Structures are given as C-alpha cells and as structure tokens.
Length: 150
Ligand code: ASC
Image (tube, rainbow, N blue to C red; front, side, top):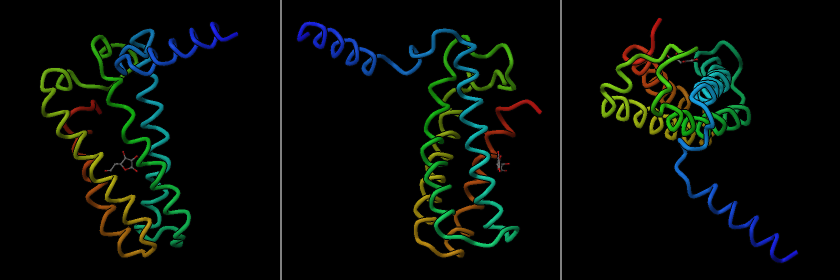
C-alpha cells in the first residue's frame, strides 16, 4: 500500500512540475481548452458589463462572484498557445507566434486589468466597477484587434 502511494505521489509531483504546454496531449486539445476558457470568461465578463453599463441592476455580490471567475479564467488560456496550435478550428492570427513578445505584453495587460476589476468588484460600489470595467474591456479588445481574425 505504501509503495503504491509512493508511486502515485511521485506521478502527481511530476504532473504538477511539467510545463503547462505538455499538459495537452494534442494541439487540438490546447485549442479547445483556450477557446473554452475564453467562452466561459466572456459569459462572466458580460454579466459585469451589463451591470457596469446599467443594463441590469447592480448586485454587489453577483459582481464580486463574476469578477472572481473572470480573474481566475484570465490566467488560463495563455499556456494553450504553444507550438503547433496555430492551425485547426481557431481564429488565432499568426502574429501571436511571430510577435510573441507583443502578444505576451497584451495578455499580461489583460490579466492585470482583470485583477484590478476583481479588486474593484470586491469594493462593493458601482462606481468602482464602472471605472475598472472600461480598461478591462479595452484590454480584451486590443488583443482581439491585433491577434484574432474576424
Ligand atoms: C466581452 C467579451 C469580450 C470583451 C470585448 C471588449 O463581453 O466577450 O471579448 O467584452 O468585447 O471589447
């Protein structure tokens, strides 16, 4: 029993230690993963936008919950833009790989703006949410304009 546990724990340590990219068995899996994370992120970001833009009544608890989800998801897609994931069912532009420093900068910017949005949403007032939503949305759009096909 002890031996089995030892092997399992060694296997788990290895799984955690390998680079994120190696966690996808096939490039298609990485493409699916990043699209899924953007899709779910967009749903929760949209709920924040609806409140920030007054389309639905402000609900501090819902805002905090949605911002927390967006903040977690914002960190996920980037490891799924590895080698060989420029093809298939994707609107990713070649610039992602050709101008990778620029892409990294744009994605870091989005992660940073979303972290600010999360802090703002937790503050529990609509003005803080409104102030942080615009820059966060702009950081999404900047990446779409430069790195995503229409
Ligand atoms: C959204 C969503 C995006 C961003 C972007 C902001 O709600 O799904 O990708 O906002 O459109 O410009």
